[in-house]
Every structure is written in C-alpha cells, then in structure tokens.
Amino acid sequence: MSMTTAPELDIAVLVLGMAILMVEAFVTKVDKRILAFVGIAGLAVVLLGSFFVASGPSADRAMGFWNFYTADGLAIFFKQFALLTTIFVLVMMVDYAPAVVASFAGGMPQAGLGEFFAVPILTCAGLMYLVSAIDFVFIFVALELVTISFYVLVSFTRRNPLTLEAGMKYLVLSALSTAFLVYGIAWIFGVTGETNLHRISDALANSVTDRSAALLGMVLVLVALGFKIAAVPFQIWVPDVYQGAPTPVTAFLSVGSKAAGFVVLLRVVQAFQGLPQTHRLIVLIALLTLVYGNLAALPQANLKRLLAYSSIAHAGYLLIGVVCFDIRAVSFYLFAYLLMTLLSFAVLVIVAQQTGEEISDFDGLGKRSPFLAFAMLIGMLSLAGLPFTAGFVGKFYIFNAAVSHRQIALIVVGVITVGCGFYYYLKVVRAMYWQSATNVDRIPVTGLSRVAISVLIVATVWLGVYPQPIFDALKR
Image (cartoon, rainbow, N blue to C red; front, side, top):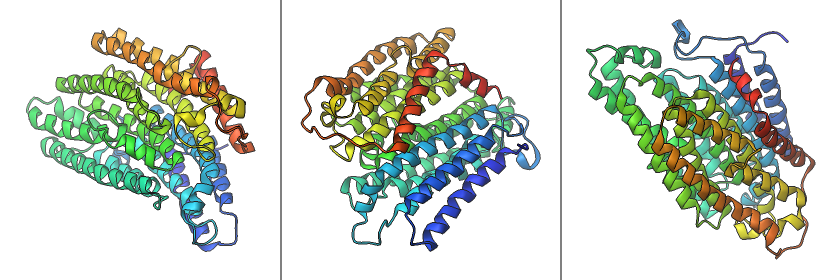
C-alpha cells in the first residue's frame, strides 16, 4: 500500500460522513441499517490506511501552512483511537436502531436512522482534527465540529423527556464552556501575540511577557477543557446527559470526547509548563475529581448514572498522569478505558432494550444470557482495576508515574478511591450472578454484536497481560 498523509485520513472520514448523509437524503427505498454497515466498512478501511501514514510535522516543528497541525505519534495513535471508537459505536447503534425508529413513530419508515449513523462519522472527523491541533484557532474549530455533532446526537430521540432535558443541559453548559475557551484564547493572544502552542511556550519563556495575564487566559482555557473531560468542578452536566442521551451516544461521549479532550489538555499543559501555577491547579482538580467521582458513584442504582460518575472518577486518574506529564501512561489508560467502557455499554444497549437500565434489571443475567453476563463481568472488573485486565495495567502505570514524581497526596487519595470503585462496580456483578432473575426470557444477541463484544473481551484481557503493543504504537 502506498504511503498516505494524516490530513488525507481526516478528509476521507469527512467525505464518508457527508456521502452517507447524501445517500440517506436521496435514496429512500433502502434499509437504512445498510448505511451503518457502509460506515463501519469505510472507517475500517481508513483505520487500515492509518498504519501506512507517512510521518508528518511534529508538534514543535510544524511550520509554514501546517503550523496549526501536527501528525506526530500521539496524533496518529489517537486518530486510530477515534476510528476504532466510532466503529464500535456504530455497531451499538445498529442494536439501538429500534429505539430510534420508535422515537420517530408516525413518520416515514426508519425515519432518522440515516442521520443517526452519519453524524457519528462527522464527529469522528472532528475528533481526528482535534488530536492534531496545535493552534488555538484550529482547536476551537475542531472542538466546535465535535460539540455541535454531539448537540444533535444527545437529543436525537427528542420525544423522550429525559433526552430533551439532556440535550438542553448539554447545549447550554457546552456553549458556556466555549465562551470560556474563546475568552481565554483572547487573553493569551493579547499577551503573547500568538495562537500556536509552541510559539506561546517560547513567548512565556521571555521575561517581558506578562505572566499574570497569561495565567488568567490559561485558567479560562482549563475551565473549557475541564468541561470536555468531565473534571470537577465542571462535571455538573455529566450524570443527567449520560442518563438521558441514547446509550451509544453516551458511550461515544464517555470515550471519544474525553480522549480528544485529554490530548488537547496535554498539549496545552506542555505549552504552559513555564507557569508553576499550572501544575498546582491541575493537582487540585485531580484530587477533587477523584473524591467526587468515586463517592458520588457509590449510591447509584441506575447503571448509566453509575458509569457517568465513574467516568468522572476515571478523569481523576487520568489527571494524575497529566500532572506527571506521562504521555505513555495517559495514552495507555485511555485505550484501556476505551475497551472496558465500550464493552460495558455494548452489553447495556442490548439488555436495556429488553429490561431496563437499572442495576436491578441485570438480576440473574448470568442465567438469562451467560455471554452478556461474562462480558459485563470483564468490563466491570477492568473498570475496577482487577489484575490481569487492561484497567489494572492502566492504573499501574498512572500510579507508577505518581510515585516517580512523588505526588504523595494523589497516590493516597487514588488508592483509597480505587477501593470505592470495587464496591460500586461489583454491585453489578452481584446482581448478575447472585440475585434471582425476575425475567427469565433469554436475550438475543446479533452476530455482529457478538463479534464486537468478543473482540473487546479478548483485547481487555490481552492488554492486561501484554500491554506492549500500545507502547509500540505510540512510538510510531
């Protein structure tokens, strides 16, 4: 295969999403689920092509027209991350299609399905642009492409009052975070005269730069990014949005949006390392996020809300890696989080359509569907951080980085909150294997979903035993 370039991958995904949207609009006499399969196949081809990408400008050497874009190893890895996430989300959306059709009752047959399958592909293009962005203007444009797509997806089944509420909350609070981002960029540009992150770093090293004004701009930008990664105290939108949004969209928000947000955060923190207050501020946010996320998850009875609060908790563990600026540890943890979160949501999509989203709805799942129960068991154990799972190795590298940098407070709080995680994740396991089933009907699983779930199970266990492939991928 001939070498290609990173921008070509992004453009290919964008064209794929627009093509599916056009086909959906003008071809009516076709099963709309075919569009999802076309999207999965197209993204798989782009994912394959990403392994043959010619190396591009690194984050600190991009110049000329490309001074806003980088194709370094981190960017390529997370482009593949976004593609893989979107493929699995589309598989979930095929299972979720009956719920979407039901929400458009009274309209044309399969109304809404085409857009439901096309918009995530456009979101994927935005995520791919975002992880390559090294200029605040390009970060803003890519972030808005992602955010506006999620406005549509979160409120897609708008006849559901919970979904409508989730969409409104996400819209209002996301718009507010965008305002903080733009205001922060304005302050930073006013102080340094630059929007490129590398040149901002050089400007901050100059003694004549007003560091107080630059610090204010950086804090405003951190507020906006804190919203995207669901860090405390900017997490207020997470529980209601996660619960109200269609389940595949919740999975996409939890994994794709969070990962891209952390890549941008790493690049911004690297640019502002000359300001010592940056480090102290992120330590404080990490401590608050760890404590709040884990304690708030303890009493939850709804599985989507439990995963929402645990998503906040995992943002806290990831912030430990950001504090230590260990890119390898953060990247591995995010990939492990991808596997175990998508695995949990893939099972939830199937089970919820027959019973519900409460933890009690999983009572006796081990007898009703041993395959789904085993898949959820692996997901919950990995999220909790049990040995021989990807989640355990991810936490190991994060805490190893904290020990190396002597972050005693983060280590102590992190270890205590891991214990909390075991309690609320194992509540789901107890329901599946120790509680009596109120519904004895077996749960059917499609062949595509069975393959996708099996892949996630194998990858979760494999990386828990042999994590080296992820680190090799980051070296490209």
